[in-house]
Length: 154
Image (cartoon, rainbow, N blue to C red; front, side, top):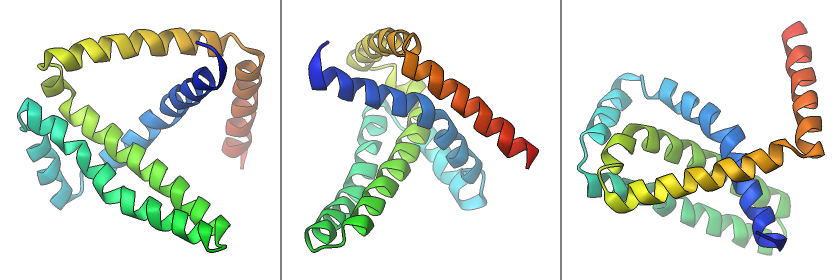
């Protein structure tokens, strides 16, 4: 891995590492609400290809929102457009993380998915090991701990 591609991959993996679990927990909490409990139960019962298809929904719903954000940016509302894109990314990641946690056992029944998942996990582990050894990661961890400590003392 070299160049901008490896940097983007590292950013994607770092976002997943820092955002995936907390966002999934938030949606798991929301998923306990009465109407959503039924939806989560239904998602868990989907067959393998139904589980794959369910991942299209967040993209389908958020693509028009992102396009409107780009339109807003093109018409001079840059801050609004950027906020909308960031919120769409966070919400989309939360939904995909939750859907994944609900469907992973079913998805692993698909040979191609299990193979892709295993390769992604190996790649992710290698990138994270390299990132965690970096100076920037160590500094970020210290800053994160200080912020957590400050927040608890408030």
